[in-house]
Amino acid sequence: MLDTLINIDTIFYRKKDPLITHKGVYIYNDIPFLEPDLIDKQNFLYIPHWAKEEYLERSYRTMLQLDVFSTITPEIKIDPANPLGRNVVVTYHLVPAKRSTFTLEPRVTNSNSVLGLMGSISYSNKNLARGAQKLKVSFTGGFESQPLIITESGAESRIRKLNTFEWGPSIQLSFPKLVPMPKKVWATFSKRLYPSTKFDLTVNIQRRTEFDRRLAHFSYEWNFKQGKMQEWGLQFVNFDFVRLEKDSVFAVKLDSLNDPFLINSYADHFTLFNGLVYKINTQVPNVYNKTIFNLVVNVIQSGGILNFTGLGSNNLSEDSLKQIFGVPFAQFVRFDNQVCISTGLTEN
Image (spheres, rainbow, N blue to C red):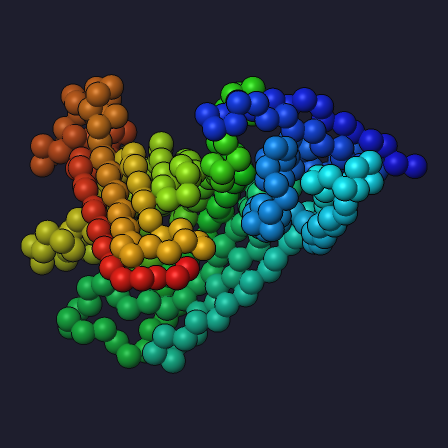
């Protein structure tokens, strides 16, 4: 009672190999639990290359990284049609892992002998739409005792009551490819790209004696490799929005301290930034190098999109800070560079 899905003549053009034709036969019951195109992206055994152990290990490793199989069993046999030839038949026996899980995580905190209770409940799906998409939806909440930021005597009391209540949901979604990307374009990309796309949305509400704080965070980023040594990370959108409603007594005491750092720590703010991370590491497995070069470049800019679109140009705060939706937004450009060079004969 097995059906056979045949993937015929998926053609890839490369600089070194004039023409490589991939052919795969996928045997499954009912609807396949994973898209055959995605499985083919993890297979590095193809004509005209030899069936090296390195390619078999690489295929096994990339399939394992998808985290959707409970068992991966490769089987290699001599080609029965040509037993004296140099071709072999490789079969992967793939058993799907459990797709959905629910998790409950209670936590107890102890701060100066005052207990707090926190907990989270989450739902995870490893293969949301038969493409190894990973979804995690969680809700976190609880209450605990925290020291007051400003006290009457200037020193916090040894005995504290439960004064902090916190809760909020979060959603995380990831793809083993670059999203959005047309399927025809994606098929022409190298298998050694090892791409991933991540979305992250978090909302948090915190209530304390001194203030109520609402926080929202969202990020959207790509990660992929270039060859064996280079890696790229692109942060298209990454924003944090914080809004506070301070108690009147707390606001007066905070201003009386005249501490810019403390005042800014408890002020409304909005940060929208984009970033680029580039890494290069000449340390390649199974290769002897006398000199290893490792470079990490991180470039982040914030406020550029808001300034370019003019959304915050005509809305200034009392401190002449540009605002959006009545909240000041951050503006900066930051460069982080790390360089490491090591010499000597190294075996990896």
